[in-house]
Image: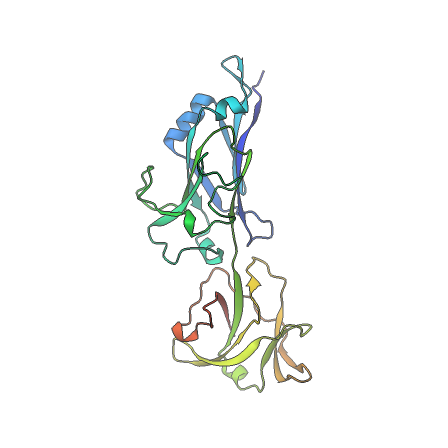
Length: 277
């Protein structure tokens, strides 16, 4: 008769950038010490898109086995985290300004419990970064992150690591000569209920003069935005009307962090996604 397995605990990776809410690019690998613990307790790990689960046998050494019986043994479990998307930090909020030699460290222990979140705050933040050379598990090169779980009877069955997508301003940069020759340019949505701020004269890092338009409000950064904007010429502010010359403007490339120099930072230094026209 095949042994029956039940869930010991699960970890889910979440990210507001994706419509599904799941960060599916994360892969995990138990350390050699953790693999030995799995072997000794006959635990089984199952990976799935957006997380993993650890299962235990309900019969162990011909005796009834329970979840609490295993958890109270204070198993010291360590996992290395890898990310298949090298651009993930470009659409993640609450990061430190300098991340050189730093990696994510997510933890569960009785002393550091944050409910079912394996990080300090509601979302992953700069407080969840450590120097990869400073933890007990030796790494010769920097991984994406490390997960450390010390089990106890309070360990939730479902645990979450939740990344926050930033709210950003969209800034359209008009640099094409034929567009710059148009009169009274403006960017709006289809219903003309959103009117971009501008135009502003800017000088690009290569010395080329351009015009910029900035969204009046921050926009949640998502993989697939439902927003669509258009470029108009001969725009009349009084009538909120003009002639549409580009009906569907491109959306920003989320895998690019744009920086047009300190002279072009928006007031208050909010995060900006630039789209070149």
